[in-house]
Image (cartoon, rainbow, N blue to C red):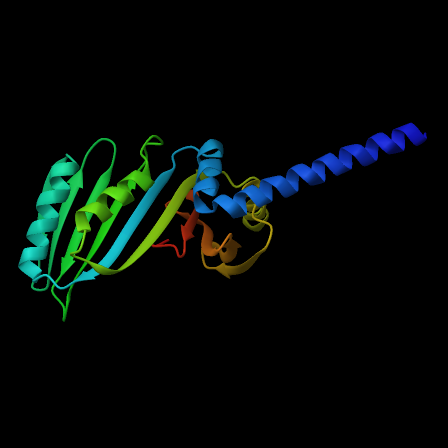
Length: 217
C-alpha cells in the first residue's frame, strides 16, 4: 500500500514538474513558442504580421520606395489601388499575401501586412527583412502578430476555448462574452495577448494576437 502511494506521489510530482516546465518555457519564449504549439495542433492556420510606422519622407517618395523594394524581394501578382490620401500595393502569391499601405497625413505613415497559410514561412525572417528595408526611413514602429485556426466546437464554446488555451500553456486569462463567441486577454512572458473564439459563415475559429487582434471577427 505504501509503495502504491509513493508511486502515485511520484507520478503527481512528475506531472506537476512537466506542467511547470511547459509553462515556464512558454513564458520565456513568448509568442513564438505559442505559435509553434498552435501550428502543431491546428490545421488551416493563417499567420499574420503587421508593421506600422511613420516617416519623414514625402508621401510620394515613401510609397515609391516601399512599393519598389518590397515587390523586388517578394514576388507575386501586383495590384495597385489609390485614393485621395493613400496608396496601396497588394502582392499575391501561392505562399503569402502582402499589402503595403501608405497614407498621406501630417507625416507620411504606412502599414505593411504579411499573411500566410504556409507553415514553412518564417515571419521573424520577414520582419527582419522589412526592418532592413525600412532602415532609417521610418520611426515609431509598431509590430503586431496574429494566428487564426479552424476548430470544431466539441462541447459549448466557452469550454472549447478554455481547453484550447490550456493546451497552449495559458492558465491565467480573462474572458468576455461577445455576440458570436468569446474574447479575452492573458499575459504571455513580458507581453499581453488577446484571443477570441467565434463563429462566422458557419465556421468556428480561434484567433490569438500579440498585443491585440488585428483582424475583424
